[in-house]
Each structure stands twice: as structure tokens, then as C-alpha cells.
Image (cartoon, rainbow, N blue to C red; front, side):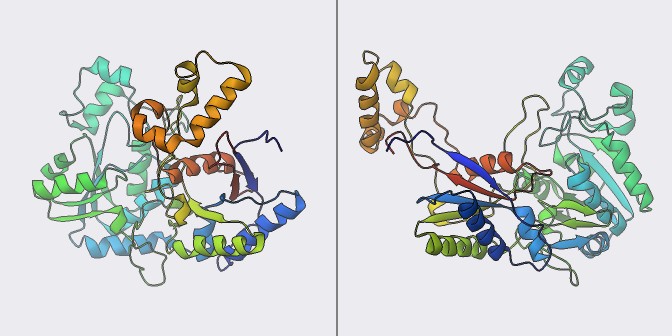
Length: 398
């Protein structure tokens, strides 16, 4: 039977998930109901993706501002810290900042420029060039920043994040000085106790600060890496990957996720008679070409996945074959030749790896699936926190 579809990604509707709900039961039941209600058969290597948000909600993995403040207070007894390289986000950082400010007396805030690590702009590249500043060398005080650039509102949110972060500190009775620089060690001119807030560059930043003489040094991954009282926690990522839940609390990135994906895979495989893979996903790691925002404020795309999702795609470039090896073929002859090249691609790739794979995507499978799942589910009111992907591992011969 001829197949007309390749990869298909479907959002599966699910009930609103609350703390204490059995996330495995809900995922398995929702997918099975979709299978029966939409008459969609299972296939080997189907992938069930579950957004991290509902896993964390089911776990009750939340923390309050007071719990954040207490952990910060314990780690920084001096009460004066450098806070460096946070992202500019109400959802991702404002509540964390409130907890940090509640836990100390003074913050020296160091922001990167012209934008944060995920692309939120403080300064346009055009304005930076006109100012004749070197962002890799020049440190700006807040007064210098305002003199050069005035007030800058985020193009999407309309927020001046420096004003916002200062107002949060003031409301918590915390003094805040603001600086802009891309050298993390610049903060040591003002204070030796530092809390780094960057995500993907955090290990390098901590290394540079350690070598430069920082005394007390932590990253957001160290805050709430253990519970404070009855708080939520994440032993690997701490506050990294957290989101605003209420004005007084955050939802943390889920922990202990491997057992969740293994059980989803096992139960759906047993019920369907097919080999079903499963993963948990967060931000999709794609970049918006207009707003320049990199959609990866989470520490990883997937904190847990089954073994069949390890590795990178093993593909050859059909366009290259059609334009080069089989340029003189047309119609059925071309179709047959390309399918044969796919069938023997293991041998071909070993012999001509660089040529035949040129232009294929070298990203990890879980990162690619995470992008697809995140774009399918969205982050609003679709009500589909579960994504069912079929045909992802197929090729033209299937």
C-alpha cells in the first residue's frame, strides 16, 4: 500500500493536570482515547512527547519567594551579592529575582549587552555601533547606559527590564546597582560573592569567576537543588528552567523524570503491541528570525527520554543525489535509484560521509523532536500537552 504521509505530529488533548495527579495514567489514557476516538493506529517507533510543565505540576514541584529567599540567605550570609547575566523575562526571572532580593540587602546587577543569552535586546546592534562601544571590553554604569541609549523598551513586551528589575529590588527593601558588561569578572570590582544566572554558558562563567578570585560562588542551578522545608526542588538544575506560577511562587523544572518516560513507553507498548518511545520536552531550541529570540530558556530540551531516542539522525541528502549521482535520470528510474541509495546508505555514508550527508541536520534526535513537539503544542490555550509523533524515523523506502 502506497503511503502518502511521512512524519506526522499531533497534539493530544488532555485534562487539566493538578498536583498529585498520576501523570503516567493521564498520558496513557489520553493517548489511548485519541487512538480509539480518531481511529489512529499505532506504529513501531511512534514517539509520545509530554511537556515538562505538566510533569512538574503533577509532582507539585513549586517553590515560594520565601523559600527562594531562605536558600539565598543561607548561601550568601554576607547579604551583598553580584547577580550576573540573568535573562530579561517576567515569566522566567522576575519571581526568582524577588526571592533573591528578599534574601539579601544589596545586589550588584551585571547585565550583558546588547542582549541577554537568549536574544532579548537591551540595545539594538545599530545603536551599539553608533555609540562606538566595544561590548567585549567596555563596562557601563547605569548612568552611562542611559546617557548613551536612554530608555529601551522590549520590542515584544514593551517593558524596560532594567526599570522592572530595579523596582522589584526596591519593593523587597534591597539596594540595587546596575552595570552592563560581557566580561563576568567585571563584577569582582564591586563584590566577591556572586550568583550567576546564565543558563547555557554557566559552567564557563563560573570557571572564569573562580579563576579571577570570586569567594562565594553559585549558579541558579544551586538554588533549590535541595528542598527548603517542604519546597519543591531540582537536584540537577535548581531554579534553572523555572517559570512564574503565581505572584509569590514559581514552578520548577521537573525532577526524577526517567521513570515517567520508561513507564509511559512500557504501558503503551504493551497495550498497542508496538514499540513506543517517550520523552519529556521543554523549550524547543529554535530561533525566531524576526524577534531574534532563541527559544531555550530551559537548561535542556529534554530532561528524560527512552533509549530509542538517543543519537542523531542517520540520513543522506536526496537533493544532492538527484542533482549529482542521478542527474541523468527521470521518473520511475530516478525514484528507484534514490530508494536503492537509501537502502544501502550505511555503506554509502561510510564511503562518502561528508558528501552524502552534507546539509542534513546534525542535531540530536531529542532536540529535533523537542522543537517539533514545542511548536505543535504551543504555550497557550491549545490544551495539548501531549504530542504524538509518527513516522519520524521513516525514510522514502518505508
